[in-house]
Image 1 (cartoon, one colour):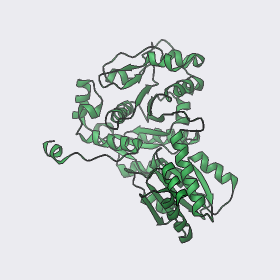
Image 2: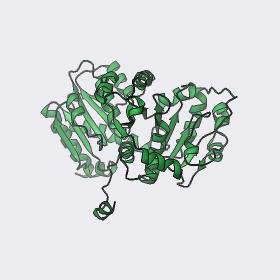
Image 3: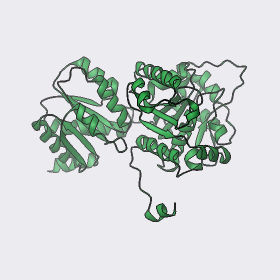
Image 4: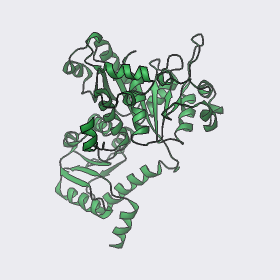
Length: 399
């Protein structure tokens, strides 16, 4: 009893969703959750397919245990499931195949641990506690590390920068996460312009000379607008040809991730070495697209690149939905061409766009109750790993 109490102190109560095929392992999972003191634990019969159907993207569990069963090739389905959970969910897998190559593939896709049946409640308890402890420590070195969330447009003008800015603002202002914005389009980036602030100096130097990059250099280059949202951006001359190596992006990310909870990166479609490094290391990648055929082709191609770089499946954000002049095709037809569902759909909202341009604020700040802002909140909720709290009744009645 004393040992169980000690475990409960070490691993605070978390939400657990377990989909396990056999009754013996389900009972062991329930005992393990009880030993850890996790009161918000749901253990159901099922496997990988049922886990995909049972997942609530708006409120993913903090820990997901999924039974791979006898599935010969679980990689694609599991990678999609991990992408839908978001980076805040620790995913553990359990199965009957004892194969090192399978374990390595699962680890590469983002699985925290893989257990081979039969397993006892003690083994499960230790695996769950270890996964949560590693997450809390932020890695082997124990240093704080920001989650990196990359936004990239399938084509120009689809509003990827608007999405990145809006989500970063929500993470900072509504979820109270220490969030920074990084604009890697040094020629045409408009994050600073959208907030009517002058870009800082130093980003180009940091990307070109990674050996000089440190937190002090980046702190001098970061600017903050009225909302106190830190932005690292630049506006370089078009006469200068800029191509940055992965080492530059690596140095910038390493310096920034020690000081923030979340790092939102707006990527250019030029896809130089720096952009590719961000895509390969990001905790989540959001491909912003409209519902045109051109965007469908390029969203599909970018998704293939992201998967090839070893990142978990990217998430698709349809923006400006309902804007007829952009040559939209039907959503069902778009999703068939994409080979999967859209994760988010932001409606065309000209009122919010005008308010944003006039006020020099992020979209959710300019029009907090608009339909576009509401969908951006869904993205922020997924990233933050928190359920959005309903407004008090008196505020809803008064709008």
